[in-house]
Length: 336
Image 1 (cartoon, rainbow, N blue to C red):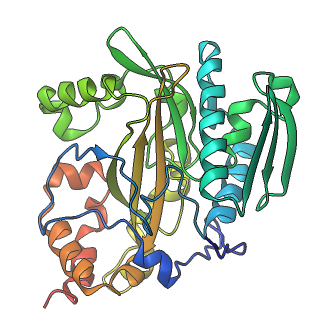
Image 2: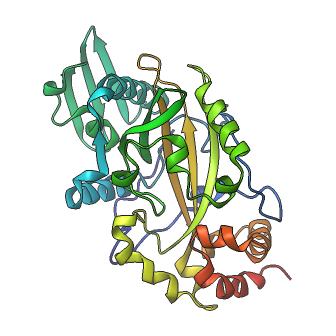
Image 3: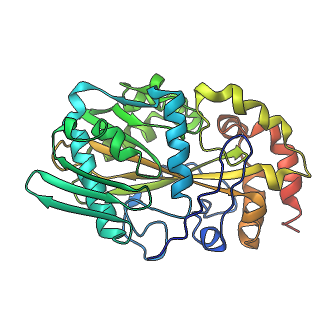
């Protein structure tokens, strides 16, 4: 599998980001119906060849761009990476899972060789070539969790399972959709989902989702899609940087919505880590401008109807309310 990496993109300041025709074709459009339906929508993570669901860790043309953005974000805010002391086994568990899958699924770009505890890891796109001792943090150029997360597209949370709940006790979150790892670290599943409007009033959905996650077994991962919208192709829309991007919602008009508004879809993967029993919660984010999205007429028509009829509490929660009217006007051109 050959990937044409685009090293010249920027996801901040002077934005320059685009999706190739291949990237548009494999974009995970999240709406199966013309009307928005709230659901947990979890499904088994079965491989689908030629789609974003083919591998556990999806690598695409934006790999170099997103790894550069992650490095810049960490340089300005190291608290985007948090690991509580009791999560070290889970960290090495995740490092092994990521390295094994990347090297098996993308052998052109990643290579892993093992001799007992002594491993050799090669990441060709990022020019990384490291010999290290598995389990020995001092043998790596940085802490193991940060080391591997700097090489995986998408945000990573490691959830410790105890007391009949899941706790966000480790994470590398540099591209969140208006939330903060520094605020949520150590919270339980119920605590960090409290702001979701539907869940806040339907504890049954909440309890069923948690019960399901607690019972995920090793080797049987699950996944779901989540969506929101972002102004400009900005990966880092964290609570900490709201002052940098919040005002951009007021810039949308019926004339520029196609250029400024991006549909933001998260592929959330949930595999059980085999040694630590922690639950991996990965958040792989895909962005597409509406100008690119409407190249698919069916998507264009459906998105217009979904946004037009979206319940106001959901629109407010997803940050769309301020520009929904001009957005609907722009989309209506494609639903005649």
